[in-house]
Length: 151
Image 1 (tube, rainbow, N blue to C red):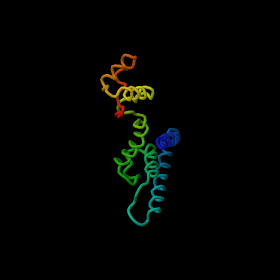
Image 2: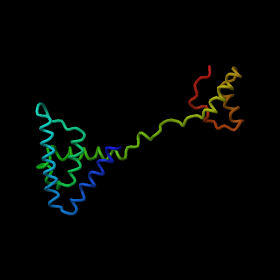
Image 3: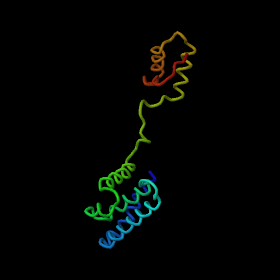
Image 4: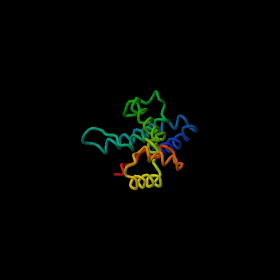
């Protein structure tokens, strides 16, 4: 999430000069892309070129300043790759998988302890009888979900 926020802020900061001086900002962005590409190539003289997340971030952020028709001439990767990197950074902003809960809601600790106590004190009762007793006491039926076997 921090990366996507940083990406968004960088794109906003880089878009300010683009609005004011569209032609000049595009030239400057092309120069920044070329300088960064040179830095990446210098860093990896031996072996194939591998772009780290920071490199992808920088190229995707600068892509908003350069006219799309010039992307194949300016960037060291294809336009499809640039768009894929951009989509990946933006998608992290809308990914709520860490907040999403799956399965049934947890049973309260007090209810669990009551069920276990009823099962220990009345070993001949089955789960239906315990559930009936809980209903009579005012607990809803879903209270037995997720309980371990008391034995």
